[in-house]
Length: 193
Image (cartoon, rainbow, N blue to C red; front, side):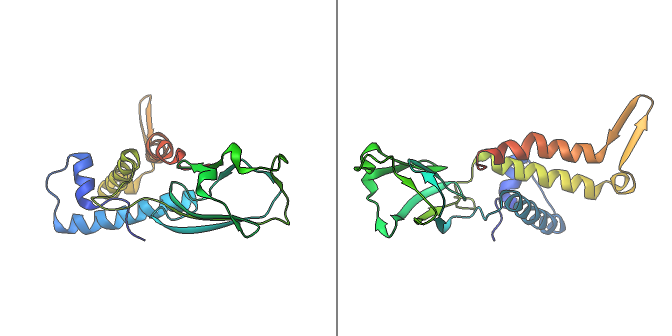
């Protein structure tokens, strides 16, 4: 798996000018860690690739939500080994919608577990400097890496999980969770169905 962003993109997003060679290696590792974390949360690889889904369940068909968005293109849709014409459907990043002309039998196109719907499509993002990863997801990766770097580089963060001065209390765990809640999850929400 490739990383969602490069070190150069990380620097651009956070406005960082100079990074030493040891830091570059560390940042590359952390970018891979955060990329893997995101893919583990979603449950699939975000890099652009061909995918196939088989659907065998009771459904009333007019809309199919794919398991691995965003859809880039549809290769083929088969229902019970019958290829569906491209003029009979349209797609968005998350779903395939069949047009009214799709079902000519007026049965409402209901399928059971005995019927098989096979979807072949290409989905995901092109990674790299000329890629198409959404800006909010790139920024979320950069901020997560920045948070991990701060935790690594602050000796107090390693020794303590929280501190309290008078009435002010702070937890490093809370800060990390805040980064996930405020930055990462909104960026991933667009991919979760």
